[in-house]
Image (cartoon, rainbow, N blue to C red; front, side, top):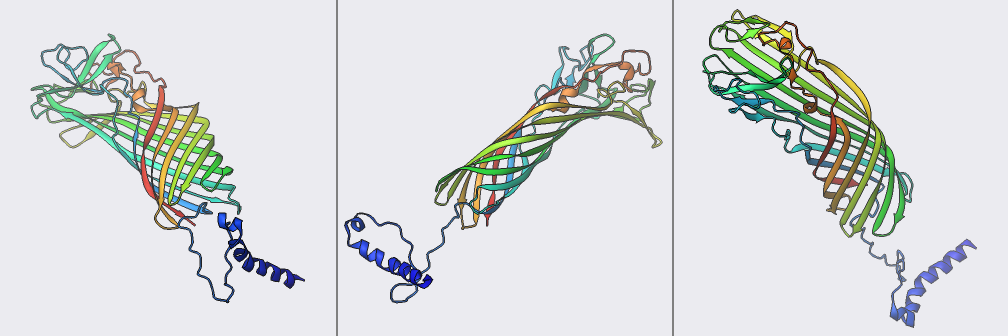
Length: 419
C-alpha cells in the first residue's frame, strides 16, 4: 500500500505541470512547484543554486572596529593659568593679567578607538527562541596639556586656588622670573567597557522583516583619571619652601594631585531588534534599555617630593588640590538608567560573510567623573610648598560627591559570519 501511494505521488508530480500548461489557469499564472530530482526520461536535473544570503542564520558572530566620541570631561574650575608680574597675586583668577591656560572648557578626549564582538544562536529550528551576548571596549585615550616657563622663569605659570583662610582668590606659582622656573602638566584618561547577555524571542516574521524581543543583563565600567603635576626649580636660594622651610637653589620640587573615578553599572535589560532583508542587503535597528545600580568610587591622592643635591628624595602626602583634608577613597551606590540604540547596514559578499557599517549611541544617567571632584578651596597650612605649612587653619578642601551624566557615540565597521 505504501508503494502505491508513492507511485500516485510521482504521477502527480510528473503530470500536473503538463496538465496545467494548457489550461486557462496555467496560462494566467505559473504556480510555484517543486521540481523533481529527475525528469521523465530519468535524466538528472541541474541542482538549484543556493541563495546568496541565508534569510535567518542559525548562528552568527560579529566583530567591529569602533571609532567613538564621548561626552567631554567636566571641570569644576580652571587648573592652570598664566600670570603677570605686575599683578599683586600673579596667576590668581580675577587679576588683570591672568589668562586661563587649562580648564576654561571641558576635557576633550577626541576620537576613541575600540573593539566590539557579538555572537548568538537560535535554539530551535523555527528561529524563534535564541540567546546572544557581546562586549565592547573603547579607550584608553590620554588627553595631555603642559605649560612651562623658560630656564629663567619667564612666563609665569600658576595653579589658581581659593584661600580657605581669607576666602579670596590666590595661586601657587610654578615659575617666576629670576626666582624659580617650572610648569604644570595635566593628563586625563577615559576608558569604557561593557558586556551584556540576552535571551531573544521572535514576535514578527515575514520573508523580508523580523522583529525580535530581548531580555537580559548588562554591565558597564567607566574608568577615568585626572592628574596634575608641577615641577619647580629654584634659581636662587630661599625662593621656594618645603614643609615651611626654605630650600636652596641646588634642590627641586615636584608635586602631584590625582583624581580617579571608577563607575560600575549592574542592571536588567529589555530591548527590541528589527531586521529588514533585501537581496544581499541587511538593515538592523536595535534599541535597549537597562535599569539598575550604579556604583561610584572616587580615589584622591596627592604628594610632594623634594629632591636634594645629595640625591636624596623626601616625600610628603599632599599636593595642591589633594591634601590631607580630602585624600582618600569614597564610594556610594545610586540608581541609573542606561539606554542604547544602534543602526547597522550590512551587505553579503558571500553566503556566509557580511560586511557592515553602523552607528551606536549609549547613555549613562549617573556617574562620578574626576573633574567634578576637584575643589579649589584650599587651606595653605595643608599645602607642603606653602610657607605656612603646619600652622593652624581650616581643614580644606572638603570632599563631596558630585555626579553627572555620560554618553558615548560613534561609528563601527566590521564583519559578520553566519553559519
